[in-house]
Image (tube, rainbow, N blue to C red):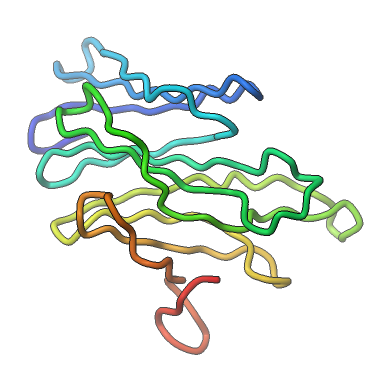
Length: 173
């Protein structure tokens, strides 16, 4: 919900293999009715998250995944973000926030393969827009990364880990 105007927002991803759809519903009457915004064709994606900024802009982020997991391409998962400046009625062209190595285990490991739901997580304040996600951290397994934009989502700082044994913030790999 946007505290500045009372609008309610909900996003969802229809994950049906090669027919992925990303939608945002907004209510300008406290949930009595909703209007749907279609963010256009989005391929190989799952999940979404949204937030509102103090200036009323609405942001939605989602994650794409490896379309060919048999290929050893090391960085073929992405986080994207789109911005609305008209209370969620329409959204601008998606911007790539990050490219990363997805986390998955192989069948020969103990425990065996499992799927992680590595959505994008969003927040916004007067200092910027923040996106967090799960990614692979070398041979050690999964890790968390966070990136910030100070220009309304147009560009993104290099991702950092919000934790580390050696220091407070380190550049994510």
